Amino acid sequence: MNDIMLEVRDLTKHFPVSGSKRQVVHAVDGVSFQVPRGKTLGLVGESGCGKSSCARTIIRIYDPTSGQIILDGQDITHLTQRQLIPLRRNIQMIFQDPYASLNARMTVRDIIEEPLRAHKVCATAREADELIYEMLDRVGLSKEHANRYAHEFSGGQRQRVGIARALILHPKVVICDEPISALDVSIQAQVVNLLKQFQEEQGLTYLFIAHDLSMVRYVSDEVGVMYLGKLVELCEANEIYDHPLHPYTQGLLAAIPIPDPQLARAKTASSIEGDIPSPISPPSGCRFHTRCPRATPLCSQVEPVMADVGGGHRVACHLFSQCTP
Image 1 (cartoon, one colour):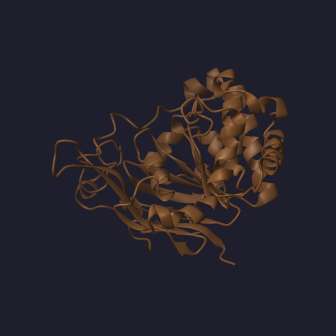
Image 2 (cartoon, helix red, strand yellow; image 1 turned 90 degrees about the vertical axis):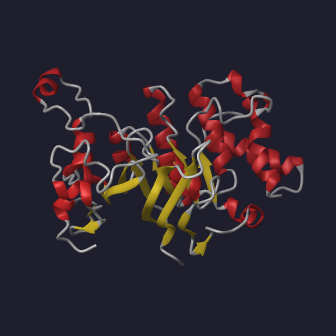
């Protein structure tokens, strides 16, 4: 059995700019990582850094521009949509917006049954009902909710329906694209605990995308930090919070609010200033050098490569360029 459930090698996704034959949006540029079986990789970064584009390319909603996507030992990069159909049982997605990702014209039962029908899992409607009612119970809803429509539910309940739809096929990999960002804080912990419970029981592998760095630390075994389409740091979750190396990671962590007025006043201000550059024409060299307080002339000229600084801690920064890629 392959210990690596999901592997991404030098994944690139560019989108053409409307009205231009040459310009492209550099959404994802050369991203590489591995997610071991039954583990969670958290992916963090500012809005527009390419996290969701990376996720949607991995699941083949978008076709990759280049690179490789390997699911449980099988290269799925260049498979056609028809060839992908039997493999989609193994990789599912929970979307960010529970208000937009559920069909308003379908009942909850029909929404959850749709993957079962698409993959011809059940021979009869009764068999499908048994699986649907069991899954509704697992996600904290009841049989009585099955005939209701999405608009009759709260945001947290809608996301539970989305989770039920993603997990009804018992996939091996679940991509969670900011599944809690649209929810109230009081509901976020319930949804995350539900996902962790499923992972423990079924051995699921998660790619968890989020803005909330403290939540990512709680959920993830490893954390990757993205900036302007590039992966700039990757290591074990506690390590990246206790010993962040990349200036961008340090700035993100410094920006986390502290629920103590005295400590908050004493805290040094975040080092990240200015706006994220355009992904149509990203800066030369290190893409973060235009906002980095420690940038040198080399940073604007030469692009750093991911280097291992020991213990599996990898960072793309010229401050650590003496380390082995």
